[in-house]
Length: 130
Image (cartoon, rainbow, N blue to C red; front, side):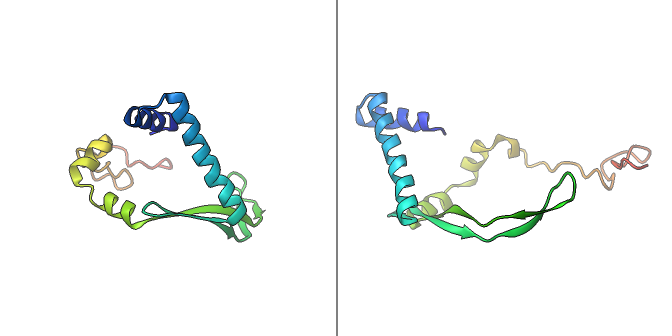
């Protein structure tokens, strides 16, 4: 769902134009961001808590070169859902989850190419070095 979808749904429900609703939704998002910058925490009852937390500096590796890289400390936004959201999400039943994710409807596992168990005996093993 996109912000445009949210605007459309709210405008239909409350009877405002989409332009009016878009301004309200955008101002709400802007207020959340400004509050996070200013106070570093915003708690929305029955929804959740957004919080700005520091992430420590660390050493990482460049995946292309393998070279070690210093990653500086930075601030990140975390979200912890509220009880109401947790309850609504946990109430989803399997049919709703399957409808939302059609790729997993048939519950088939992909073949394991490293062992070749699903391939004929003389077929490839999935290894590039053979």
